[in-house]
Image 1 (cartoon, rainbow, N blue to C red):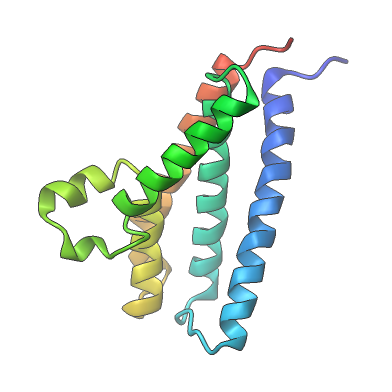
Image 2 (cartoon, one colour):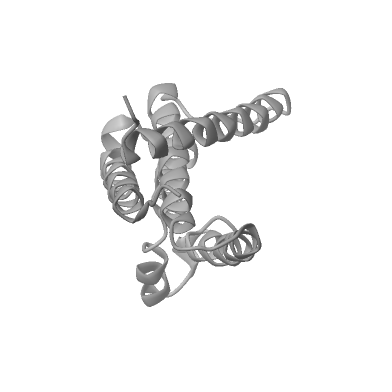
Length: 155
């Protein structure tokens, strides 16, 4: 039986997701040994990590369906990283920027992940406190994956 577009993209997404989780594990293990405290709710923290990794993976796969070659992919990846990270609050907290910039920043999945991390790590929040960011990350993941499936062409 031939695979569907969703199955092919799902397989590609799974491989990249696993790599993302390995990267997360390395960073968090080093942080742990350096004394970083990650809050009081490991389940909520884990869900944030998983949903953010899935969301970014789905976004990159959806974008890859719009590109023609690896050179374009490298350029767009760099551009997105250098745009979404600061807009989303990965380089500085969104609490210190004007409201209009905070609003624009939330077009980025990074902002929703950072909202969740901030609540969990810095403000002692739990799962109930991060349901909105987790829900948005899940919804964005679905949208990006479906966009990728619709645009994906088998050549």
